[in-house]
Amino acid sequence: MTRRRDFEKISEVIGNAGCIAVAGHLHPDGDCAGSVLALSAYLKKEFPGIPVDTYLEEMPSCFDYLPGMEGIKSEDDGGSPDLLFLLDTSAPDRVGAAPGILARAKRVVLIDHHISNPGFGDLNVIEPDKSSASEVLYTLLDPEKIDLSCASALYTGIVHDSGIFRYSCTGPETLRIAADLISRGVPFTRIIEKTFEERSYTETRILGEALRTARLFAGGRAVISSVTRETMLHFGAEKRDVDGVVAELRKTAGCEAAVFLYPADTGYKASLRSRSFLDVSKVAALFGGGGHIHAAGCSMDMDLAEAENLLMKAVEEALVRSDENADDMRKDAVGL
Ligand SMILES: [Mn+2]
Image 1 (cartoon, helix red, strand yellow):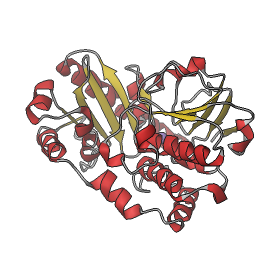
Image 2 (cartoon, rainbow, N blue to C red):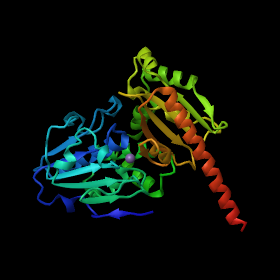
Image 3 (cartoon, rainbow, N blue to C red):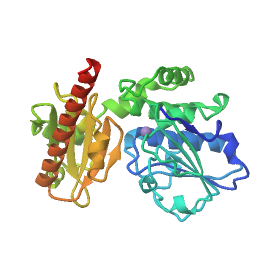
Image 4 (cartoon, protein in one colour):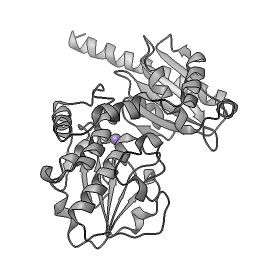
């Protein structure tokens, strides 16, 4: 796996920056928020003379324990920092909260783990073999200067992108880092309970509806479900209330892939997940989206039935192509 590392420690890149900004991607998840807030907390403590602005779109309230949540800027205030740290953000058009800041910042430093990241910063640390941006960030910090709140934020990022150390992106080093963070007193049981297990009443009910209406396709090797605008309204649900649905669909026995659609401002958004071999980021890319091998998403600016049909066809074709590739590999292996 390619590793790109333009520097070894955060302290090397601060230089004489008069003001610093830290930002992440659109629709921040646990890794994005964890890495952004961990770095903000670290910089504020380590460089108290330098103002640090933190940009993040609104987060679900289960993340309220993260450090510095109260000081976050969720909209573009026109700031032009000397130095912008952009975390977990795979492309220039994925910058959340303050998209314009990318062009206004004098110097941009990327810290990421997306394989698709082209390296659009002035300095880049992009390590696709790492579980999370938070794991990459940990290796750039001085271990002696990671305090409990920074450690809790890093742990949050790692535990979210690794699916509580279950996804294949979890490596031995991921667990060593988690062990170090736990030894610093990170309240890991509470973090996992609060951000994974706890569900609002609304989430519980709309999840039930999405599971009840799930359908198999591609010969039972994939599952799809969706919720309409009307259903969202009926349950009083917002986008964040359906974030966990696709992960539940993915648990369906025999299914390699899961697709979930929910209403966006225009049309629908699709979340795709796979279990082992299918690269759903390639399916999402067909519709202008992207992501990781096992988790991806795209926008479908059309009516629901059309979006479902296109996605089912694309997933089924991708599954067939994977079968053919596997056949070819078997033939190669036996010299046919
Ligand atoms: Mn991530």
